[in-house]
Image 1 (cartoon, helix red, strand yellow):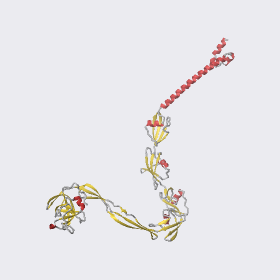
Image 2: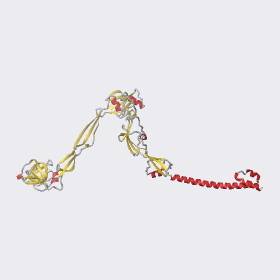
Image 3: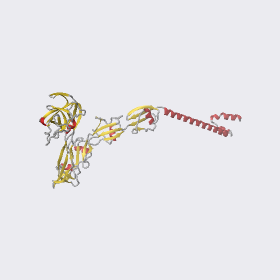
Image 4: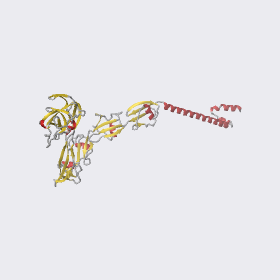
Length: 505
């Protein structure tokens, strides 16, 4: 029996314990203990395996996160490749030194993670100014597209055969990439387009069409023309892109003018156009009921009221002013014209309106400036030249010489009923005193001057009857009076005054 038990224990390693179970009644307990021991060992071994797998997984994640990835970054069509360990899009862009704004379109999003061999795309906004021509206002909008054709689609436009897109004066192919550009000024030149005028679109509508004739263009645009319509120009006329085509319904009109009724068949987007085509255009100030710019009435009745306006003007001139500019290269009293001026008009206008020959309105408008004056522009010289002159009275030194007209006076020859011996300066009326206008006296009073054949004198009096500024009156005593009435020269003697008058009026 002992030998048998030894045999059984020897064969336990072969997992063949079933026969032994039958031969040894105590074997089930031993087997159960062994099974419990084996289960405990299996649990420990499973825990160890799970722990090891976790370490491997964490290590793999660490290695994966720390490993550098190859990322393609495309900014407005321009591509570059970077190698980075960053996983979030914002971190990748920061490491690559690529800036962005809130208006940029970034895919994937900034907070999203990106795997190995990923791709980041950044589309910058492009400010577009588009001139579509043909009287349509310019469009200003923002686009994220790279190609001209796609940019037009953002504006709700499409290119038709023959259309041209221009950029900076040069033709731009719709598929040409516009990378790295923040602002675009584009011009769209439509090829096969025309302006269609109808009763519903009296202002005209830009329409696409093509063909050899006007009828062909209308047909290609889906516009049906019946016999009751007028087509201008004629439907058989050659079609030219950019032309204006009118498609209007013929109407029977009852036109009343000066008590006469005229029946006519015509067409037009407005009353004025229909009247013109009927051979009864509005002339002068004539008005129509309905108004010329309104649509044709449903009943076809139009009244023409002949109107005439008469205007009368009561005006006076506004003298032009002169704007002076100093020029140090011009001699004193030399002037140069830079720009012509013109006088204006100020006054009232009276309007008389007549309808059918009868006055219906007479109105005088408040006084106003009818024509604005335009200032004359001149230069004046400030270059002073001191000169000398040998005279019978000796050599004189002067800085200015002016042509004047000279007359003469004395105490009892002053043009008044009494004799006047005093002057404006307080000096006596005597030889050596010269009278000038009040304007010149305010400017030159007290200055020493010289007049040939008269001698040296002082500007010391105001001549009340002197008609012009370049007119002087030479004083004498009554007993040595000499009559003057001729042109002469007035020399202004040195020293040059500190408060220099540069421009003589």
